[in-house]
Amino acid sequence: MSETNAKMEFMVNGKKYSIVSDLHTHTVFSHGKGTIADNVRVAHSKGLKTIGISDHGPSHLGFGISKKDIPVMRAEVERLRKIYPDIEILLGVEANIMNRSGELDLGPEELSQFDYVMAGYHYGALGRNPFGTLFNAAHNLAVYKLKREPKHLIRRNTEYIVSALEKNDIKILTHPGDKAPMDLLEIAIVCAKTNTLVEINTQHMSLNVEDLKTMALADVQFYIGSDAHVPNRVGDFVAAIHLILDSGIDIDRVLNIQVA
Image 1 (cartoon, rainbow, N blue to C red):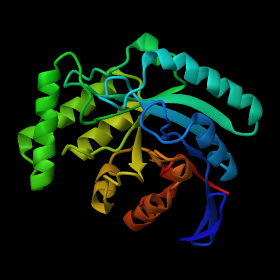
Image 2 (cartoon, rainbow, N blue to C red):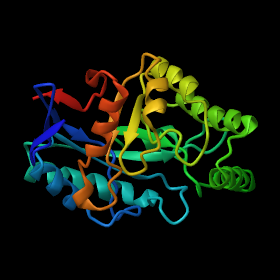
Image 3 (cartoon, rainbow, N blue to C red):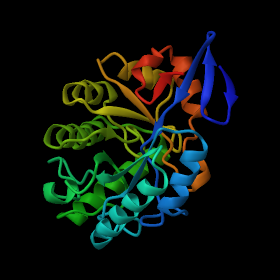
Image 4 (cartoon, helix red, strand yellow):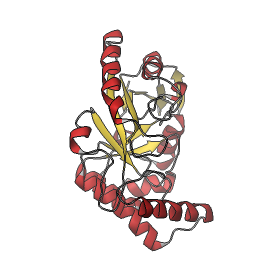
């Protein structure tokens, strides 16, 4: 692979490709460092066709959006659309998967206020059973530190994800395998059935070459997300592109990469 310019173009085997969108970016409305306008400005400067703002759902301790800010965020997106008519600006959310029942931390009416919904498993997202949620998070953190993957914990975490995919309209599953061991093939199969994109996240890089090969056994499509928490990381996809090429995955299965 060789990069050709600042506008997110690169060459693979003599063919030019371009990155066209980044739907996973955070702002000061959750725990990002820049404003919505900052992220849009960087995306525009890099030649992206679409930029998505996807701050954390409200249950995330210290990091989640305030529900009262959703209309404020929408108004800012609408304002910026007039200033940058040549880039699509979307308002999304990275909802938190709360429990084995697949509950998200925003209800259907609240989710309808967004242009798209992403979801992922995070530590520190409390639901109706905070003690159970915190116990599961502590268990996952402990086995992560010890580099162990008990089968019962893999089963529990997989049920979190599968239930959420089956019960909600999720566009992108964010950073699968990060923070919790899970059955990636089973999750990929369900993502394929529910038309959910599997994220290759360049902030966490939770998937390695073998993980990507495993998930690609299912008829699933992928999406690269920067998970940018500072504006200059919007569209930062180089590590993911190398991972895709090393895994041998057909680049056409990555929906925000197109032939230039």
